[in-house]
Structures are given as structure tokens and as C-alpha cells.
Length: 188
Image (cartoon, rainbow, N blue to C red; front, side, top):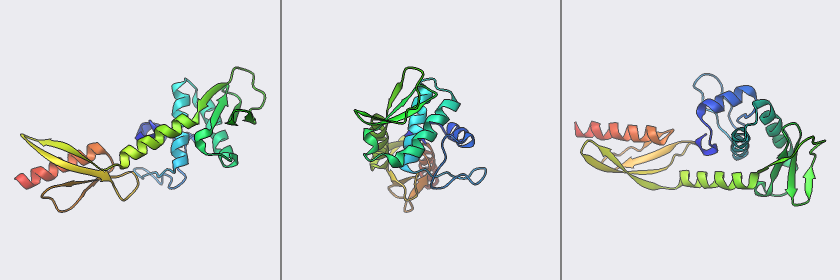
């Protein structure tokens, strides 16, 4: 969930509290892997933005639940959407003149520009999926590790010269660690 700017611990906590639920594959027990849709990731990014603005979990849940319920009703792309909330009431602004169901707001409305969050998320996904080469230091030697997105969602795949099988991992740190061990195995 690094794509959405939250830690694994936050994802688990928010899943348990019902704030963010993976719509593709939910957790099925300890150590199981959740699988999130793009919309889930955008909602998670929005929840993080609310948290960064000092909203409590109850208010975040209210905002995210409202967004999840009303996203299908918005006719335009998510990139034009704004969330308006005072913490108690929530509304969606779909264009410069339309506020959808903000209820009776009792305070100043705070605006969350979902368009910016959408662009940030798309850029993070693009960066993750882009093929690139990293230098990997093992002892006094430097190796070229070719990295790309793995076939399974949320994974990385790496290749090292002289090693036939690709190395697959769920994080870049794990991929680098596995690559170092593979190189050490060849050198001994």
C-alpha cells in the first residue's frame, strides 16, 4: 500500500475498522494478502489525506463511506472530483457549480481535491511498473539488477546476468535482498 502512502500496519487497522476494505481479495486470515482495486487505492489515499489533516477515524470512516457509496453516481472522471466536508457532513463537488448532498453543514467546509490525489496515485503506479536497472553492491562487486513489475499484482521481478530464473518479491527491499543472496550463492 505504499502506492497509497500508508503503511501495512495502517492498512490492517483500517481494514479491521471498516474504513478501507479490499474489493478484489479481502484478508482471509493471518498472513493472507489483500488485493485492492484502483478505486480502493484512491479511497485509501483520500483517507490518508484526511488523516494528515487531523481527522479522527470516525470522521474518516464517514467520508470514505460516503465517497464509496456515491462514486458510481458521479458521471465524470474521478480526476475532476472534490470532497467537501466539515467532519460531520460530507459532499462531493462534481464540477464548479454542483455540490452533491452535503447535508446541513454546520461549519466551514474543507476541500479535498481528489483530482490531485488521483494524479499522484497514477504517477506512483506508473513509476512502479516502469522497467529500470539498479546497481546492486555485494561485497566489493557491483551487479546490474533489471527490475520490472511482477506478473502478480503488487510484486516485483528482477533479473541478474548469469542467473537464469527471475527473482520475484513483494517489495524492492525483499527483491534486493534475494538478489544479493543469489549472487552470493553463485560466488561461493
